[in-house]
Figure 1: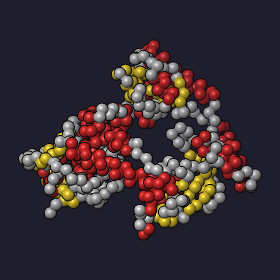
Figure 2: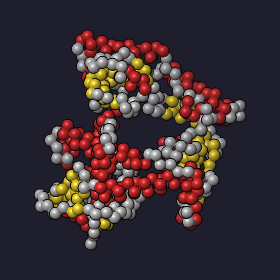
Figure 3: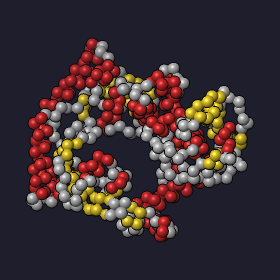
Figure 4: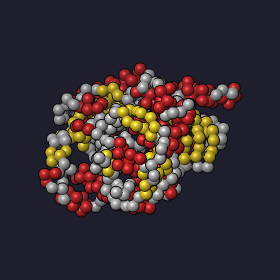
Length: 479
């Protein structure tokens, strides 16, 4: 009985950085003869049943050789990223792995450049995620990956993530220029039978006012002085810059790597001020303290490799005084009181008092980052935001919340519900943006389907072992 895959056009949320899509194709493939690799009994990572694991060549896609153990490692990484794999067969996941290798192979042919900074950060996150689940069992992690050191493990995971990144970039290249016209959106909607039209859940429109405690000039100067002290100690006394990073930096994202980032002139992923300073320096130089929205930095430029700059940095954030924190709290209490007694409307107060530039000029109206409109579907709202507004009636003003974000350690805010749309069947006029997104996704899926069909036909592909029995939706093998 052939193993079955699920006919799905859904994205597996955490899957290997690349969107795994399944399609039906027809193209000739070549099958390699069975090998006789070493075998061992093991527990299946999805079903938890005992199965025979053969770590031989499971497939070849272009320049990529896929081992049986590669799938187990990919599944482990998916679980570490929080993916729910219940209901997905090994065949489906293996088909997704084949697709990612196809994208990666073609990305190399198209000379797509890898962002090494992103790769290193992703590997760090994955390792920390797995260790969090295994209570810091690095020895067990190395045993699973059959590595004798953390460095060897990082190199292998970097390679896996590098291939995933190439796959993602290739897929984006296929779909990035695809757009839909209003007429295409209308046609897409009208082609959906009425009984099959989607139902959208209850949606809210939200607004907020944010007050941020002011940082004093003295606090800023204290941080600048401390960074200058670090710089002098390294330059004049031979102190180790990386050691100071480990002891003092407030950038949690780079602390574990000694504050290291790799910048690429062609890929502007870092804030402008940081890039401008780094790209103006010479190897071995330490910058003067400079400010970004995150705080104050100094940079050590370690190496220039063509378009890539290896840097280490220390980030310090000015301390907030209790006086400035209390002043901000008093201010938002006063603003809330004026709204409640009718002196100001919420929108007027936001425009006059809010410190959040992104929302104040819209009367505090929040934009949904997923849909880019003002509507937040209740069941898909971030848990923290949901907890803050779940008991609010329309037009009611929330209590004052103390919050934080990646820039501000402390901020105070109040929220209100400006509109509520109960759950309803999709309506072309009311839900145009959502329907447009569905139409765009449908068009992108068809474009990827066409690209994949053509690329499979032109790429050297072999399938081996138990995976010959998979009923792939894409025709990786010819039956």
